[in-house]
Amino acid sequence: MVPVFQLAAVLSVIAPEPTPELELQWSAPPPCPDQREVVERIEQLLRRPLGPASELGTLRVNARVDATDPGYVLELSIAAEEGERTRALEGPSCDTLAETVALLTAISLDPGVDPTTGPEPEPEPKPEPEPKPGPEPEPEPEPEPEPEPDPRFRGAVLIAGSGGAGLSPVLMPAITGAASFLFPRGRVQARFDHWFARTIDAAGPSDAAGRVSMTTAGLRGCVTPVVETLDFPVCAGVIGGVMQGEGVYVSEQQRARLPFVALDVGPSVGFAPRRLRGALAFVLGVDLVVPLTRPGFVLDDGPRINRVLPVVGRLSAGLELRLPRLAARPRKKDDL
Image (cartoon, rainbow, N blue to C red; front, side, top):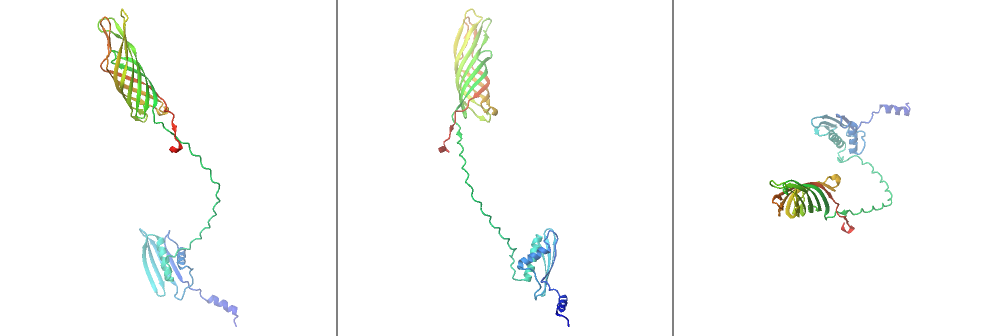
């Protein structure tokens, strides 16, 4: 009689292994999913691991994916007890075709499979405890209000050298000073000129001569276009003064003082370098002077010394010191 334990051992060796419910043959080029990933997806759709075959037998699936241009081609064969089905599918990506194989295989094993089944969601991380609120920061001090730029004028003082043609038969040099009130696009200017004395020979054969000088003052208004560091005043005004003459190389002393009144108009240009912050400007101007009176000097013995021409030209060049604006008025908080 064979002992029971020996019989059990013999039967365990002879008994065949259970037939699996799925035999999958998967072939695909990289970077496609491998067979293990396809099997995992099938189990996700079934919501269980693959096991032994049921009474329906083993499902045999043969899937081959080849790369094409563009996309991929899938040749799929699914064989069961009731027969074999073959399909050829195209897809833009290998992952899409692998998902198709997993879905068709899972439905063949269990027709009640939900195609929308996805992998189980990962557990949500526990929320970290909120930190305890610290002390509130002290409010920052309000910035001091910026001062408003004063819209009123500022001043300027000019000192220049000048030269004139037409006041006498010879060119007359002069020194010029001016004080101006500057506005954003204009100015009002008071001007002073002293023309230095020049000796003028008398007309004709006489050896006599005369010395002529002149001092004038005037008031002008200007329109001042500005382009960055350049300004271009165009001015017009009236000037008045006294022309003085005295005889030279004459037997008796002869002197005269005659009034001089004229209109003047002319442009100028001022350049105020940025590095000087607009405090100093280089000025060049040209003026046309139209005398309303034309003083002339004649010696007692007859020869003429001088007579002002109907039109006089004046050229000047100098430096203008531009004073800062009046103190700015700080804005109040109620104005902000």
